[in-house]
Amino acid sequence: MQRKNLIKTLKWLWFVCVILGVTVYCVTNWERLSRELRAIHWVDLGLGVLFLIVGKLLLVELARISLEFQGYSLTFSRQVYINSISQLGKYLPGGIWHFVGQAGFYRLDQIPLKSATQAMMLENIWMILSAVMVGTLGCIWFLTDILTSILLTAVLFGCWFGILWLMHKHISLRLLVVQAGIWVALGLGFWTLLPDKSLFGLSIGAFSLSWVIGFISLFAPGGIGVREAALAGIMGVAINPTQALIYGGVNRLLWIITEIILGVFVAQWLNARHHETWSDGVTEVKA
Image 1 (cartoon, rainbow, N blue to C red):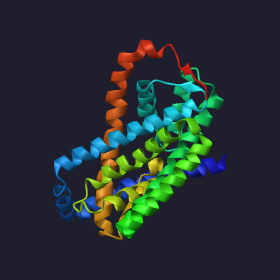
Image 2: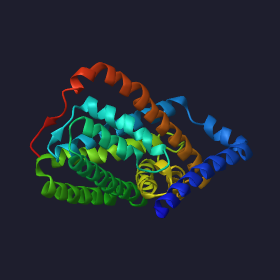
Image 3: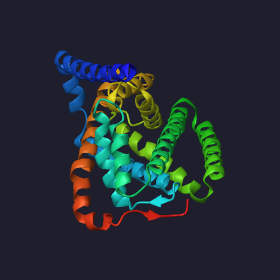
């Protein structure tokens, strides 16, 4: 109990420190910050939001696949609603509320708690492993020549597909495309903000790896602050780390805006449209 209270306190302190740190930085470096922000074209901001939405919709499909492995199938619209609403909970100190919310929705859809828990565990394992894989490939494309990059990509994707095929034969290709697509799309949501568009591979790689670092940080709600710091550190091999931190902060803002759009507007529209259909529950499938 004392350990849980300590972690909870640390999360609150971290959240407050991040807010104070951002506020102090904005006040003391407003001239440079405003100059960097003005350099971002509104088209790039729009594309950033679009790529983030695509990535989050692919995350929805990954959640559906993980449920199928437990013998249950939800419609895509229902899964969009569940993910969009429950993901808002990750910004609450405690670090578990989005999992609690997702499991609660699954229970409302008559999915046993054991199956729901196993599905969410599988989903998060897939997310972490695929982020590491795509992140590694992205950095390889930045650090090596194109022929070496193509060769290593083919080898790693071949091994990745082989492992998925051995474990999940009937949907291995679908799973591979979804896993890779998630991090390419989310990474592009960061890349489009950068003035140097030649940093394509590094942007995707840095974002994917920094997401993993933020995800596993126990003291940062939603990885706030940690992901941005890791992103700036990795991108620092190509651009000024402070500049990378600014773009990482803008990406975080777009990330939150995207989740609000999906959670508040899209999810509520889907709920109003499909409420009666959803009341029928889930469809059982062969695992």
